[in-house]
Amino acid sequence: MTLKTIILSVLRYLLIAVLVIVAGFPIYWMATTALAVSSELYGTGQVAWPQLQNLPALFDELREMPIGKWLFNTLLIASGGTVLSLVLGSIAGYALSRFRFHGRGAVGFLLFMTQVVPEALILVPLYAMFITLGLLNNLVGLVLANVGFSLPVAAFILKSAMDAVPYEIEESAIIDNCPRFGILTMIVLPLIMPSIAAAAVIAFFAGWNEFLFASTFLMDRELWPTSVGLASFIGQYETPLSAVMGAALVFSLPAIVFFLLIQRKIVAGLTTGAVKG
Image (cartoon, rainbow, N blue to C red; front, side):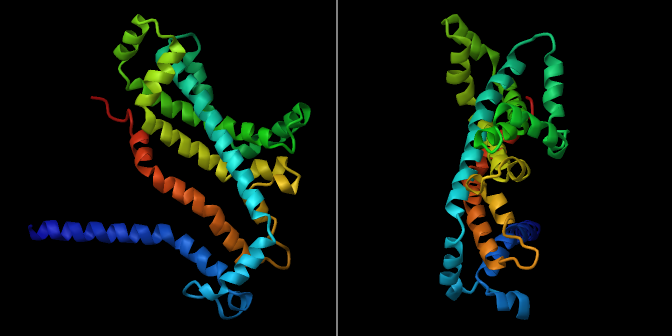
């Protein structure tokens, strides 16, 4: 092993260590804040290490929050939006990838334009529409609102992956009288599972981090997701930082675990179709 190789290896591992520290610092800060008492936070300052002896007091504070209900609502919003985005996105992506029809370019352009429009810009007309349709203060309406933004991204990711699937595979299935929907579900989709995973992560986190629509469309406290519930504890004169940070840590851990479990498929899915050979 040459000196140059050793230096490059050391630099690579140092860079990885720095990235791990930067990425993990928010988790460390939430843990230390959650396990600190108010006298430390507002008096002597932030503690350097999580004070595990304060765990019972933190659990007592968390019991006063309906954190379990809020997490369940968040999971419903994220999982419902993910499933609906993948189902509709796979159909839309397949149509854009395999069929040639008038207005195909316009459809793709309109899907792209949904990512340009800010959510706040359509908040008022969407609120009026939800009142008319009876979707206000309803988790179903919130799922539909999130799908409007995550569906185009899922459609584009899946379309790019389907473009890389050889059409000859589908021709063989057509000769055997396999219907189009069967070709999509039994042949195409199993071949692009990494891209499906990437689209699922994007749609899932869009719903998991939902705040703007939820804080506007949901008035019932029992229907709030965790993001809105945590924001409700920010007071004018006092904010229970330790309890809020503890709940935020509980809110963040499932998303972190979910991401770590499928991170390899995310990278493979996002790079599908990037290189044509």
